[in-house]
Length: 376
Image (cartoon, rainbow, N blue to C red; front, side, top):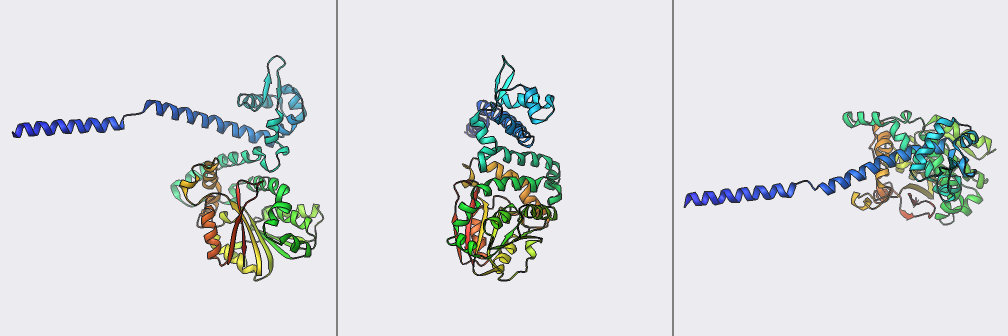
């Protein structure tokens, strides 16, 4: 009886073991499908770099103005080396971004593609965004070291960051800042026309400040950023535009000491990068006059990972956070809030900073950002 029981148990144990093995057997078809997907990711990453190069070299703008042309004709029109242009054309053609006619060895940028990859796209120019992929590649090794050692990189590790961000935000601001974004706060355009005190925190190269100063000459504008290089570029643009109502200061806004000075403060995609974002928001509230408005623009995403699964560009957001936004905050011994802090946390932090009324709004021309109007 005991022998039978042991034998039965042995059979049951073997069956259970086989069942466990069966449950963990490799799904070959799923593995092959995933390998195909990753190969597509590799190819698309290469297309992203080629697209960034096409934007920075002016090749897209050049081709948009040309009929079908040879590599030599395109290189001559763009004043570039033909051999490099020819190889780039090959990559863009196999990516189905350009059309190629073998009989004449000519290349054409279709109008529909030019509408997405050139200045004709306005704020939706995807070629501008591709520069951020190249920027992430430049700092990858430094970030890998931070994975192992902790801490973060400095803004000095990103020589092209302010240029890239200025170009990205300028596309949106040129199209929508005055007529679409500022009116999100009721009565704000009328107040700006009458004349108020305005500050922009994390102003970068100051294009938004200069646009507002140009549109509302009766108001006075101050841009704050701790990058002296960015502030110098902001001042130069203001001088070129002949603006006398825009000034810029190299200041860490975590140390801002203004009290009740401003009627309006803006922050365009700047808060999530801060070392101490909570402190910056408190400083902003304190710097506002009673009844003043804080217009904060930041990344449109959720604070909850599961709610970002269906956002088509969510992986990009987490990547740019890893390779820039979170890292530069940690590099300043900050909290490392990250790009995807999310609209829920953003609203919570605004209220914790002392803002009595917080409203979230959107701009149709800008699907990437959420807009918050907060009042002191």
